[in-house]
View 1 (spheres, helix red, strand yellow):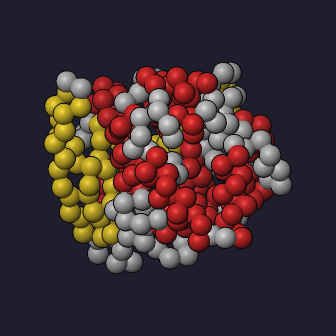
View 2: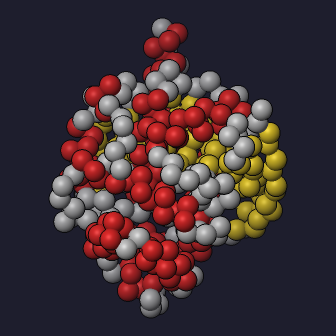
Length: 321
């Protein structure tokens, strides 16, 4: 039997005053607790949002006002061991569908869309593969590919390549790196050491970050490691493991949104990855980077989910909307 508890957050960002249920706990059949945030219109169209790495459910707040406008209810869970969700030792991405099943049953959702950003991309694709009758559309924004299927990582940004080399040789160092990153994230983006890190990103990413509320962006990262770094390390292991997905058998429409100047996750990798999925649509953006698409153009992604939902309804009813 699952149970749920929640707490309210009252915020005042810019000139908008609102109350958010950002910290909700669902007790799973395993006994572990899953934490999720609830954004947007409570009566809106259902959307599961999967955060990046390292990040947390609070990343979904960036779409709060847009989801209210578009009448979307966005549910953003912390993955096990990340943020406030209980740790699940030795978990793999194959454990994800059971968690999604319990969460959507609790929410009363029979049909829903999914959206994965960056490190959340694999979870969106896994959900689409596992629930072909329930997932209406999957959007993958600057999403990570299955790195185990690529032998050449030279196009990836050097900090990522370094982490991939450190992981099998000296995994104990990753905890310290994440803690240092948490400290750096509290620094303004235009001052060292954050300004040094920003130089590794694409020009479009630097511009998008300068235009955004940087505090809202980095609070999600700090929340992700607030309970310790071990869960975040296990979360990162997923990207280099075998996902166990037969990509050719995916029937749910999957749209990939990716900047051609993405330095974190090279466009060439994702273009090849998308070609393995027969229902995939590749949306490429010249000059855009890793963060700039979701920071500047989230409305395009949400509108595409709405269009796919409409197409699904027309196919089922045989009528036009």
